[in-house]
Length: 319
Image (cartoon, rainbow, N blue to C red; front, side, top):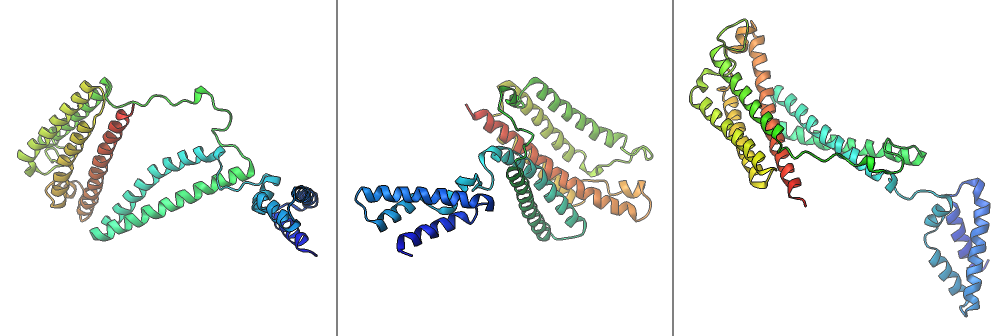
């Protein structure tokens, strides 16, 4: 066997390795004929046989890529047909699953008596593990869909009917009214708790510590008034701006940081509330659990509200 035959045979053999058996002989013959024709053409143009053969095989490129072209085999994990569906679903799942994983693990660690470092470490590991699983299994589903030829829910030709509705910027009259109404309701709950109490069976038993009056509660009402002013300012401007989003973040800090400090030092909740309405040692246990949950909720609400305003301001800056 000469050099030309050896290289050609080796190339054809490499190309046919991934071709189904029922197509192999026909495609091998077709490929060999194409190579021979191209070699003869180069020889006719004055090239020697060995150079012509090497040039032809070089132009043909990787035999696996050539074979994929013959058989229609995909050489990508997820192609353009499914990529956007995969990316949209993956982002949605990450936004939902990762905060839930961090919240759940962190809450469990705190309730079990873990230190701050252990809680943060466990939450980080849980988030990374959840992200890995979400990315892997979501990608695997779309790989199977593409390889088996199944369609996604968004399959079919694109039409203008698929255009998303315009996003609300959170600066309308309804948003302002809702924000002010919520602040008024919260102020009313605080006043009701102090003067009447939140436990129907124990009139006058407040949920919040009486020691918060008058200065801490006055400070809270002052920040809530600033929140109302901010809602009016956003409505007046007609959109969220970066300065307004920064002001919103500062107001969130002015509420969250003191609340967490008071909660951590045992000055936020009335220590007699749950032991009074729940007899025995269970009252103190419930008190600790509720305090932990409230702490997580304070952090989550502050982060969510600050992030939401920042995203609205960023979208409003786009032309």
